[in-house]
Length: 359
Image (tube, rainbow, N blue to C red; front, side):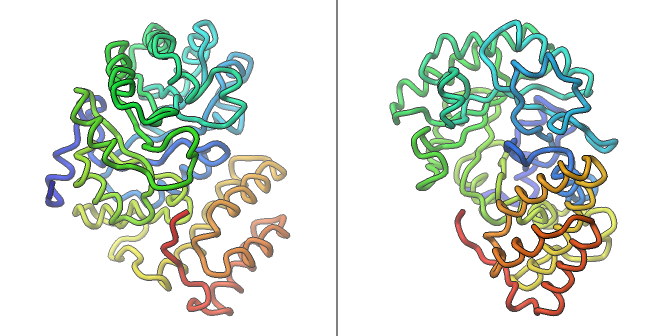
């Protein structure tokens, strides 16, 4: 369906769950990435007046009860962190209950249950996408979370292990009946992981089948993809993962399309467009991320977070691997600044141009 810019905002039903949300685009919960430093960096590109929900990285409900929530690298928050919906991995009521009770101290806006993680460790313990193989138990996990909080409970899932439409429809309906307020679908099977193409028709199908808001996820590489997903599937929101680590200004580009003012500090500017402008902005984003890492983590953890971020984000940049190697030798923020300055200014932006690869 074709929607103009205003309709794209008004169309979303996310505001029925979170009345403050007026921007139907959000960062995905990603292990090792969706921590406070990445949220801070991405938030710098959020248009003035735009509000969305924010994730944590995936949190293990068996560990949370024994941690100082708000002090660990995974649960640390900033003064700007609001509308936080942490994602938990779990299948045991006592652990889920205690985890959610502890997460309430972060002034959260909801809780997300992970039923989409396909890694072997999660499958081994009947976490993540493994729950999609046991519908009644999966539904009970949602009910467990609902008993632990009056806040919205959301579920992030895949299309299962096999593309069995009847099974999938019944599974999702059961999640809603158990109390899920929002479903977020990454339309790949567990076996696909990130390979192949995300089948957006499954997002459209789910949107027709359930009454709760549906968030789509998968194969959003540029801001136009996010608009296209809304138009083609009718979903209520678009979750963006790895592309947003490399192009955090996607939020700015989307806001510009929707008529929002530029982000704070970028007044009077246009969002970066084209390979050279985006490459230059990536240099700025790296420095933002480095600064936020050193502000929020002790140096050894900050460096580890930076290395992982660069590994994920650099493939979008021509010669990104070379830049990554140089940055991985750095230890202090000023060293990172010098390497970025040399790469993006002295070496020339044409060499450092951004690409639109699918990754």
